[in-house]
Length: 333
Ligand code: UT7
Image 1 (cartoon, rainbow, N blue to C red):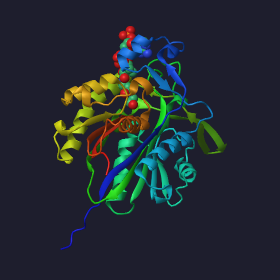
Image 2: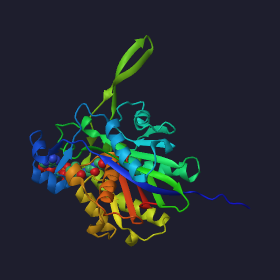
Image 3: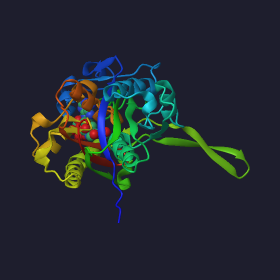
Image 4: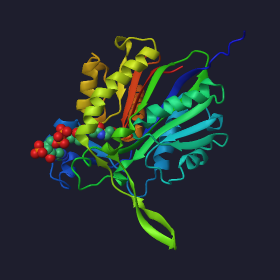
């Protein structure tokens, strides 16, 4: 009987974009009772880039996308699908359509997806399904967030952490498969640990019909809970992804975790016996850029020549949901 051949997935280009304005920890300490010493020693973060009011998420996403498309050596019109992983779209109906038109990717279907800080890894797995089944050949995946718009800048437990940015990759169909394995998880019982919630005020329309209208409220987080969750669950999901990929953890060349906290990066690497030299970290400069962080770190390392074609990368995202996931892939064609 003829067995259908699954199509391989390759990640062939990366790009990133960061707003030019930086706020360092001394600046944050003018807003809340904190210090550079506290923030740096508890998180590793020294500064973060913040978008000004006129910068749109679409602008950052398009800049990152252009870098990825150029590196992959394709034209925007070659794209079949654009997936925008974000929690902070310019428009709640979705921002992917504007990205499509600004790139001139008029053949591509485009949609937003939300999985908070796991968005990039969830997006990789989502995009890969379309490629593997032969539906699409060229996919642009963007992780982008402007969380500064949703941070409570009087809450020192959260405002020290977040920054803005965008990262993107081009994923392409090819005969040899470079996406070796992934594993995704959600635990909604812990949903209240990290939220950016809509709050409805009742509004009576007519007798017997009341609706809710309101707005989204700033980020709330139980930092300790999220920290504990990340340190426990991320090593486990990386091990599962490595199992699916048929590799040993020791074969991983680079560990790119969601850039949330240097202590989380160190603890995960230590649990998995991954030496610090293999752990990619740029959070000192950018803080936690949510769905963008893995793609920005990947792009920087590729452009620095650190990550070479064929290197095995283990990426893991974690955050609100709570959700977490890992993907293992070989860089390049
Ligand atoms: O994308 C995923 C998103 N989230 C995360 O990954 C966050 C994970 N969690 C964390 O990174 C850490 O929990 C934080 C960095 C948020 C907090 O660090 P911590 O070591 O867990 O601190 P803590 O909340 O246990 O607070 C310890 C002390 C407290 O004082 P007391 O009660 O011991 O007197 C806090 O009030 O530090 C105090 N504190 C601060 N002090 C100076 C909390 N935040 C600050 C601050 N500056 N910014």
